[in-house]
Length: 160
Image (cartoon, rainbow, N blue to C red; front, side):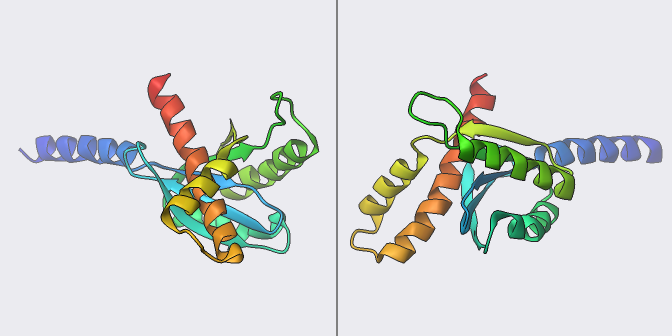
């Protein structure tokens, strides 16, 4: 009876570990990074934090802390492609920065087109928090943009 109990517990533990994997979403910025996280099932993106940094590389320790604290297995970063979908100087900067994140956290990084996430975030803020002060609104925009980036990736994974 004991060995059956151990096998069941081990299998449930394995299922639980797969189920509990979380994904981190990042809206890259030179002064602030919006951060979102998936729910344990990988269905819904939730706002997590805003990292205020003097430069993006300064966010590495915070991202390392967040990935460890939340058992993150993958990171999704928004790429601000231009209107035609082409990459630009900022996307090259983000790709280089992401290599640092991969080395620091051990998590693979994937990219999502984030062309209209800031405009979407502005609309959400205008609807839910009209008249909010500009600085506070910018902070919420980064967090909502990170949430939109991550939700886009989660939806792509679910819908193939």
